[in-house]
Length: 327
Ligand code: ASN
Ligand code: ZN
Ligand code: CA
Image (cartoon, rainbow, N blue to C red; front, side, top):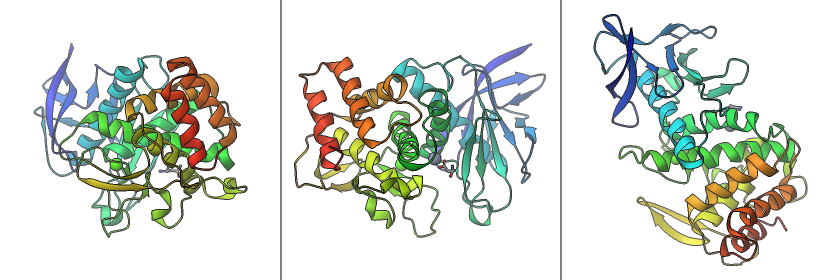
């Protein structure tokens, strides 16, 4: 007999978090029976297979190799809850089945990735094995690649690849806000907790993507030739403008200043509505070859279906795309 339990974990980035676990015999496992049986494994620096399912004598998870497992298990739970509570989506493939997560991949591996082949999430430990890439926005980003693969299937190159990446940044960010975690608060920065550069700077900025030195703030002919993590800037910027509007703004203590490519002013409709529009576009209107111009059409169709074509929401979608030069 296995019972669903609620344990407590000490995470690396999110403070003390609740964990849904399973009691099996006299020990506990990171096996989430409330979210499709999502399990978290310790790869123990390996790079293949599943390593070992995290288990512990008590339901209090803290210290050593457990830490990255705590973040990974929690990140999968808040991502599941975001999709369920916000869109009624029942897991990554909307079939009620949990994926699984693998922590401690490789040695000083500075990346995290989703794989459709294993239907699983994998996290490296970062530089010197000290900064696992297990923060909430990274977990939400990676698992969203699974959602995109199950829906629009945006091809991971050229403009559709930028849209694929942006979809992961958009919902990774939405997961981070929805988790409402006081140690890892919501922001429009990507990877601000994992310190990949070692200087405290985030990987990406949605209010002004060019702040990272590589991403683009607005569309131009040939933008699809950029790495997908940089061409994504057009859509990340669109999403920020649609949510929060142009100009300066402070949210959860972070200062943003979002420009427009044509000097126009955009008034945001809020991130919840913006996320609903993007999700509807992703799941109803985008296809594998959708490019930026087609994304404009897809999100307008989504806003029209959700709010009507004479709504402020519909008009702001058009204004926000125009502000990133997608006309
Ligand atoms: N962490 C990266 C990403 O999700 C892995 C990759 O380059 N696909 O974008
Ligand atoms: Zn990605
Ligand atoms: Ca973030």
